[in-house]
Amino acid sequence: MESGAIQDAYPDDLAHCYGCGRLNEHGLHVRSRWDGDETVAVLTPRAYHTAIPGYVYGGLIASLVDCHGTGSAALAAQRTEGGAEVPRFVTASLQVDFLRPTPMGVALEARGKIQEIKPRKVTIEVTVSAHGEVCARGRVVAVRMPEGMRAGSPA
Amino acid sequence: MESGAIQDAYPDDLAHCYGCGRLNEHGLHVRSRWDGDETVAVLTPRAYHTAIPGYVYGGLIASLVDCHGTGSAALAAQRTEGGAEVPRFVTASLQVDFLRPTPMGVALEARGKIQEIKPRKVTIEVTVSAHGEVCARGRVVAVRMPEGMRAGSPA
Image (cartoon, rainbow over all chains, first blue to last red; front, side, top):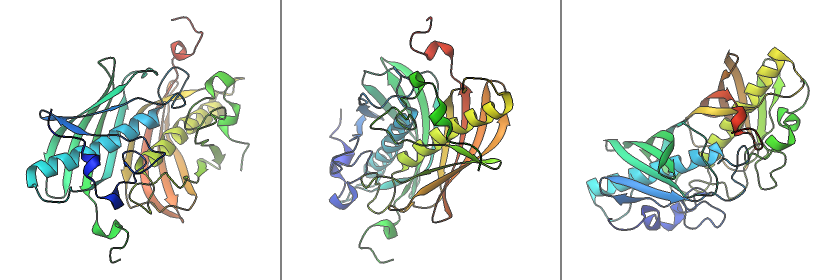
């Protein structure tokens, strides 16, 4: 296991994301870290994150895939480039296939595999498992955040 | 404008979805209705549903696409089949392309176009707009809820 979660190292002004920002007090706090050559994040849904009773809401699974995708992109770019400030990525495209109903009441494990790294674009394949069984499979195309999105930056 | 929101007509035991269930007190309450041959749902994100400050969290947009997709599938099946109980669909596949950053502080309009209706599967294309400008484009493959997912049903 290598280092901590990448979201802990995002600059403060970019750490308010509902899905993964450590400074969003209402948020989900997805935290992505390396595990060998894969990335991993663990999230336990809240009781009200339900779909059909007993099963996890698909939008929550999509949120986990989304933030673990951008987090994995940042991990990959950081490992490739080094540099003082952690690179921040946003989602260009998100795909989730729901393979089986995801049970409530257990921690979900998202695992990412970096498929491609380009200077401004990283593609990540993500699985989401419960009890070790893959329930959903996703794909995120993450692109480097345009500087113009940052508050206080020139328009 | 034809009738009300389909989610208002889901049976009580299937109305707890975090995204669109009227009985989920913490939920987003996505409500989908016909507008001619298109379906529409309007959602105003909460202040903490942010990504980079100033812009809406992608997972929330994915959630809106997801629930408006399954709601649109139910609307389409109901219009095609009639029947006493509203049919309930779940998501098999969700795709969202984020075309531009989605601004916070305005109502988002999701519009669905039914692409294909089969007895157990409906495909819907969804756009999400802010200020009349399309910010995201999605595609949902919705399948009829397996009866085994319903609490109290035989395993």
